[in-house]
Length: 119
Image 1 (tube, one colour):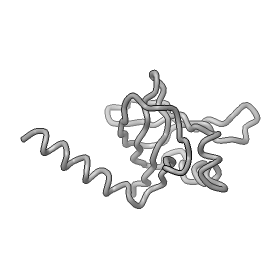
Image 2: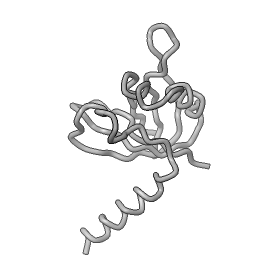
Image 3: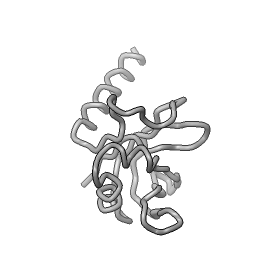
């Protein structure tokens, strides 16, 4: 019974992301192979750019109980997904913006997979 509920939740979660930004694509090689896929929701409290302050490379997400998690963006992969993808992400993920994300967990590092903007 519990396994059926988790499958239903997973299907609902996938349906919710159908109208969100998806950085994974079968046409591309994709980010490093994940050991786990993790979902978070919360608000953006800090954004990080590369050393030249041009390329959006990650952000800090504040979740429930004020826990904070740094989310990396695989900039090489995201740049290959589409023109302006990183610029669009930087524009949409402003400080204070509420989002729901799916990430790949690779060797204790979280890489952004999908973003859904919340009201």
